[in-house]
Amino acid sequence: MLQQFVHKMNLFIAIMLVTTHRSHPAPLPSLHPLSLPPLLLPSHLRWQTVVSLLLTGDNDARSGAPVIAMSAAMWGMEPPHCSLCCCTVANKIVMVVFMVALVAAILMGNLLTLAVILCTKHFHTPQGYLKASLAVADLAVGLFVVPLSVYAEVSLMVTDSVPKWTSFNSQMVKLHPCNVIGPIFAGCTLVSITTIFLLTLERCIAVLLPLHRDAVITRKRTTVLIVLSWVGSFCLAVAPMVFSTEIALEYNSCSRMCNYALGTIGEFPSRAWNILLLFPTFDFTLLGGTVVINIISLSGIRRHSRRRRHLAEAKGHGINKPTFSDIKAAKTIGTLTVAFTLSFTPIAIFVVGNVLGNQWCNFSFVAFWILASNSCWNVIIYSVRDPKFWLRATKLLQPIQRQDSTKT
Image (cartoon, rainbow, N blue to C red):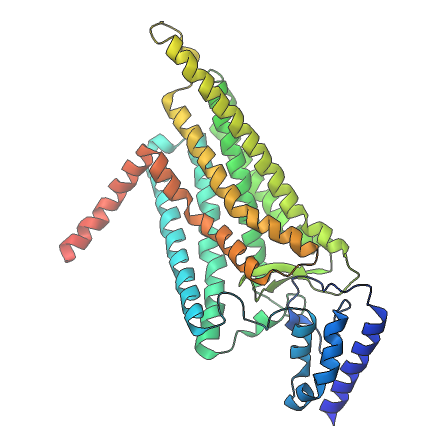
């Protein structure tokens, strides 16, 4: 009797929503269907889907679980925990292996970067400080963000049931892990962008104003800028939850990560989504500025190359020119900028599309994990572009290789 009463109440609410909300056919994006209270249906439904549910709802009522199926279908989403990566056992295994390999690559690569910078006096420079800050941000992704996804997916694969917190958002569960992991991922992403911007600015000054470089770029000023970038980035990361009660954090069944989402149901478009647009706006503003500064630096390098050809035999003219290492470093930072821009662009496209009402479940998985994979790219770029870094890294790894050879 109770199940029939609950089912009839859901059907009654659905009928009322069909008649009153036909002018809003698009569902709210990015809200996990299981985060809805049992008797509350979303305020913006695809009314055609509701009609089909009304015709087939009795079977759901007999199964004893009408709410979850109804919620997922009316949101126009795939069933929970089923996306491109994990609809089959083989896909789940591949996904978990990829996540574990990514954790290992991030930890090994960034620990090696920190070891090279800290143990080599040559890298105790403002540029070295900025690279160390970037490595710490990437290391945090490998220590906190990806392991949580590994835990959730292994639990799903082994026990065929996910941890309880993955089915509800942070407004419905106390001590939700995503309350910590979500801001860490967002904050570290913002730190990476600001650090790459500062690296680009530092190289631009070194190339265009070589005589004033040591006076303008000091270790103390660089340290202050690093601290400000971390504080500002994490303040911006928690801003959506501080300035809007509609925004919560959830373990998204599409991206397989902790994401921001609407925790309560409001009028669409909600003002909360305007707050979430701060992320791509801020990121692309900094990335745009970084690209412009890189273009200026590379233009200066080209002018210097022309002058060097004309003044190759003249004496005293090379003193005002950037050194070869400065030019090499500027090109390395340019490569970092291109790599990060390519990895972040899919996320920005997804966020904007999400605000416009598109779900893009499979695309969200690809976009978020491309961004997470960027955390292990930097050490590869340093090794390829910077011979001194590669030489020092190989020297640090030689004792480990000798131990392995003696054991075998």
